[in-house]
Length: 143
Image (cartoon, rainbow, N blue to C red; front, top):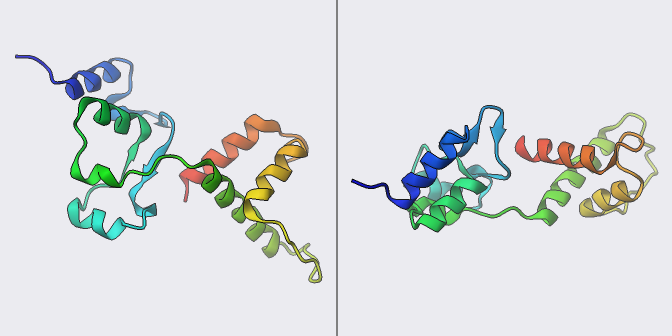
């Protein structure tokens, strides 16, 4: 008896402490959430328990030729979408702020908020690129 390619990859990654392509405190990289897909109703009809897929598992399944029918809905990470989502969260929070002036009209687009923050040295008085990336990834995981 021998292992197929996907079983071998699962065993290999499990030996590195990433059973089921997960680690104890989250995932390795991007994790696509099925409920964010415009096709989430179709996904639910195919597999009611399907919640999403990590980038790593998707790549392993793709390479091994073991994609499941539901995996065709997987959407890769989109940096512009991530910047826009993060920027919209910032704009929404600013709009709800009690310190906001009523006559203040914000013409910024959500993705521009990210770029403006990067140019000014990040959030929180110069938190820098790494802190901003971590904050964005944390926020993206929570949507």
